[in-house]
Amino acid sequence: MEQQGVPAVAIVTTPFRKTAQAMAASWGAPDYAFLDCDHPIGNLPGPALDRIADGLADSLARIVCGT
Image (tube, rainbow, N blue to C red; front, side, top):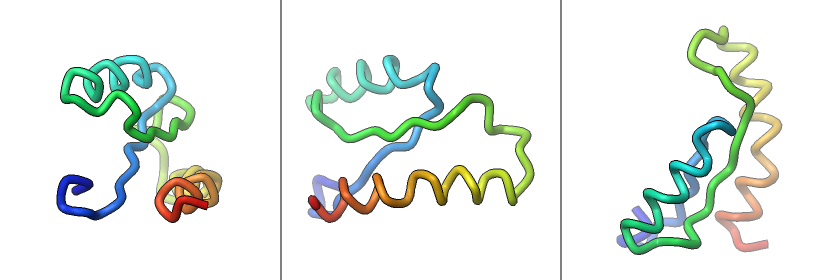
């Protein structure tokens, strides 16, 4: 999306951050923005995921809006 001018941020669970950073670097984007959250999230109910998203919202807005 960023190649098309749309700001983007990847959200990963903490154990996968280093892998995600390595992948971004191998794709030529070593400074790509990531946010991490606790692991695991796969079996969390909707309200728990909403709380995680709410906790990331301010950081996401700062990265995407550049503030």
